[in-house]
Image (cartoon, rainbow, N blue to C red; front, side, top):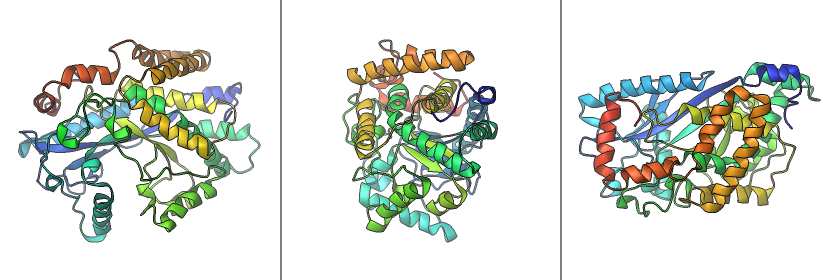
Length: 405
């Protein structure tokens, strides 16, 4: 295990964490077509573009509670809504895109000056993967333990260097989270409905962007988790071979991130600051795109994973982890449902012992196992008929600041 949970100092700080988020969404016209206007937010610190000019990315600050994070997301959405309303535009509330006629409606993000290389990189992605795939929008959740918890763990470890201890802990935790990313997909998938223009049949998948049709490299990456330098080197080799243009092209469910600018060089020099979980859909049932209960549960999942015995993560296990994610993205997969029930039972037992005040967050997930209660089942029932019309109406509702549906 990564923490000695019987240690009183560990227990004292066990529930402390830091949370950050990036949420992607597409700007649309009042009629539901992809907006063809320029990014209207200038160099806003918290509002940027992602792949295309009409894909807004909300970049949250770092907070110590999911509630604070969610509050900032809604405040940013107020700001976005005020600007879009002036142009007669809306923010599409789904991970899957609205109807479009051709890739000509998908303008690559137009970065200028010293950032021109960001546009050139996106043209490379468009050529390699196609623009359509880049329209899938999602949420990246950033998580880290508090400094006090890490220090407490370091004090009862055999490590002599705190930075080394921290890097090793997050490296091992990223491997475990990758192996359990299928569970997060199963519990948070919320995009079973799509327009035919994306080229995937609706209701076959609970999350198209996490399915075999979504964000994946043309090969299955095998990474070296033996140490942080070896992990970084294993990614660098794919870049040197030409399989990847840059580390950012590694479409992997979990990334290790340094503080500040994201690069392999910064990760090696400065060490790991947090984990980035990349498999979350934008949830149309929530104005912010994510429920507080899901953020809190993912934190509990990390703590549970930190309590497990040491285990390897070889090439076979890594390949299986990616397959599990794609399987979890299949709508109504009965095998995955049974595995989720077992995993949630084990997590519930862990939380009962060490964090009993947080049991409601686990039971919130257990309730999704009831027939018709998962996000994907609810979204399918509400939006399969009239996806575009209902999506536009929901976008308008959220633009006005109305509460979750």
